[in-house]
View 1: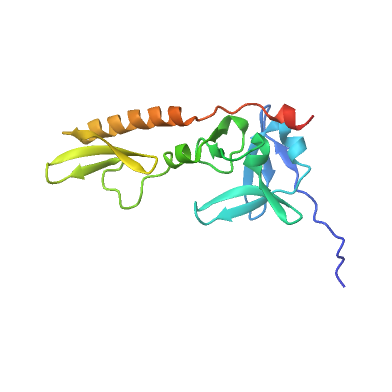
View 2: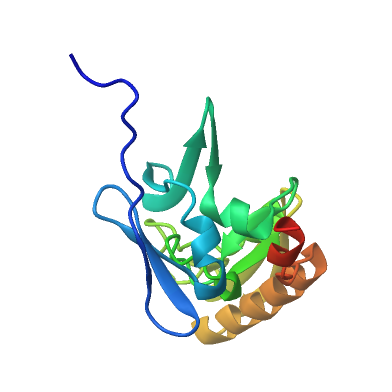
Length: 183
């Protein structure tokens, strides 16, 4: 008869250098964290969670019937803002790689779609006029940014508009909430 009180040991935290550590997750994954909070994070069993929608792994823990993602735990996430991994690596949970951002701002950071022929978001070729056009979606409405002779001009205008939009949407710089959490 199996021992129902048995609890698997937590994997160790490995400190790599003065500022970086990694946590061994399930499914053969590891995630990076700041060394100064690694011991506190090591009190929990962190799992590798595959998200089919983004096709990436995330670190999370379960407690009772609830679950919490590591990046939410580190920044003390409170909706409606989202926690964004700046470099796109969802297993890099160092505070320098995490930022609070609005849902709309996060949607503008996404990848180029598979059917995109220009290689850049917000830029397409207008065959009737034989010109490149740029546009950006704001509050579910597309704002036309202009038509251009060169693809690079259209990409540059889109990138400028995107940066202005992200600034106005409030990409909030990550603050050190860890000291507040541990009080």
